[in-house]
Image (cartoon, rainbow, N blue to C red; front, side, top):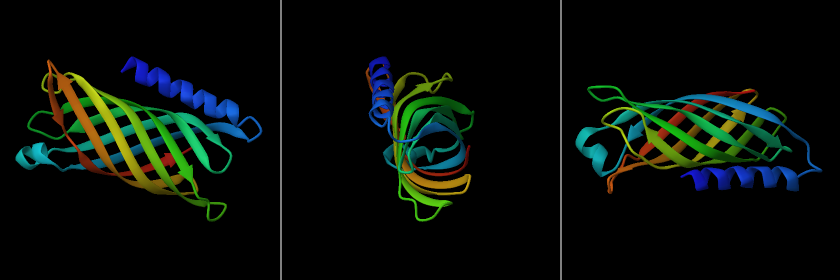
Amino acid sequence: MKKLILSAAAAVLSVCAAQAQTPVKYQGEVDLGYSIGVGPVNQLIRIGRLNLQTVQGVKVGRYFSTGIGFGLDFYLEEEAELILPIYVNFKGYLPVSEKVAPYLSLDLGGGIGLTEDMNGSGLYLTPAVGVKAGMFKAQLGYNIQQLSESGVSVNMNAVQIKLGVVF
């Protein structure tokens, strides 16, 4: 996972360097969301989760942004379970006016279990569509979350709805 995160960071830096003629400025985001569990594991136990995440990165021109994201996913079971997602975020915007821009987003990284029942680590991947209006945004995506420990892998996929602020 360290190689994946380092490779993603190198990709982010190379994109910024390649776009040297295009204005590059800091962009931060904070999101609050809810994920509705889908798939075989979730049919048995219906795992839902609250998401609190942030992305810190850069906006490259009007059409692209990228950054490093992290947060907490609170699994809503009998006992609260936590996963720490760490990922690289890529967004492509299609500005329709000065204030409104639909976008496609991709989060790619890993998740680390922080509690006893959610230990181990694994893939974290979220393709999504959204719209940014001024400093606010809304997003709908499909979250692929895997945890692996001692050769056993569990997929906890979900439909994810997030609202956020961009600064």
